[in-house]
Length: 226
Image 1 (cartoon, rainbow, N blue to C red):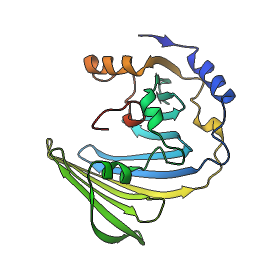
Image 2 (cartoon, rainbow, N blue to C red):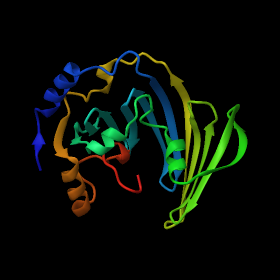
Image 3 (tube, rainbow, N blue to C red):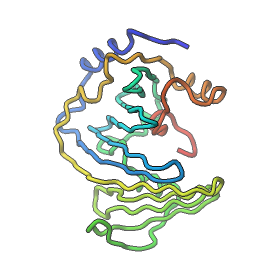
């Protein structure tokens, strides 16, 4: 364990001094409402270029995830503790300029072999419905057919657990003015510094690493099932 009490302050200063994402970087916001065996969960997403900020409440604790450059941050806004993990270089390279760091289910499912099964209207918008079925189960996606490919609903059936989870994306917004500092971790947080190899090694032996869940792992490291 390497708790770093001064890390957050140093990280914040470095981020502010780092090159900005640029005013030309696309910005997005959406809410994701997920329901399944674990109940209801609401997540807020913001992005600017390839940067991401997500906030979700887990068991009464606000979990903040920030992905910016080569670092992945996750911390508990209530306890003030979290992680600062160096991202795998391959995960950083995989991000394409102009592509949202969230809401990319269309690309992901196509890479998994999804096929379009029908056209359908959802929330007053024409969408395509895409499905992939394999040994893991079934994933079905409702996505707009324009260039933005905005996901509106994702249904996942986990064959091994016999469970289904549905995520509805709500209130999509784009072209917002979001300051760069919004994508910096709160300097008051106590963050433990790890690289992704340490994180993977410890998660294999310990299960959950640190005081917060690590979400959106495809932005942290690459693997075949990401």
